[in-house]
Length: 65
Image 1 (spheres, rainbow, N blue to C red):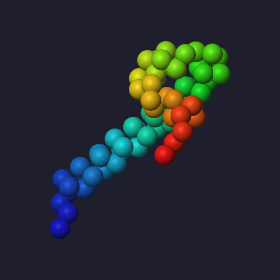
Image 2: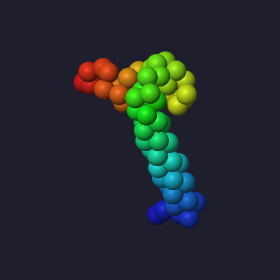
Image 3: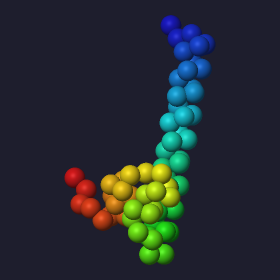
């Protein structure tokens, strides 16, 4: 049986996950805009708070497995 506490915890986890996904989508959009403005991948990674490897993947600069 799921208790109210369990339901609240599940809902909070879902909300946190949704926020992380949205933050990553926003970072991807920002990375693409900055790349189009000729900013370096290293600077973009620092600006959006993700690794260079992630930014390169978002920009299609590395082959994806």
